[in-house]
Length: 120
Image (cartoon, rainbow, N blue to C red; front, side):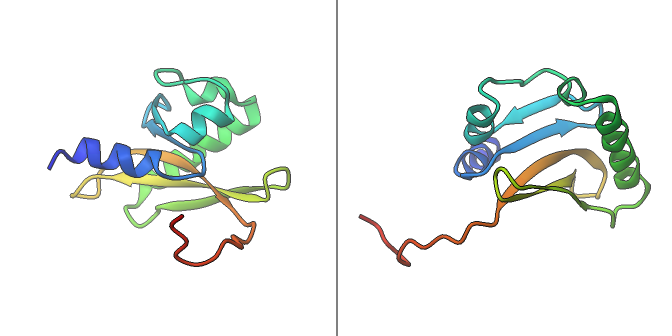
């Protein structure tokens, strides 16, 4: 099995925006929901260019915190009232727990009221 295809399919299947960055803050992948949310594909660009000076500093502090301890893996960044979503920054680590980068994950709080197991 090609794990790259598997994980790309996993990310693209998420209805919420997910943006993957390396340790230099370069965007290495955006899922379909993220490209739609930001109305463009920012792959290959620095996520720091998408934020103000204060947020850039915060992102660097988070990355430093992730790098300091392999147990440091998730930060609740903020709540977006516009989207009714919590936004998290989550560490990406390899099998030896080396830091590869991080991703930004939006988790919508709105209750899904669709029927369970609806397939039609």
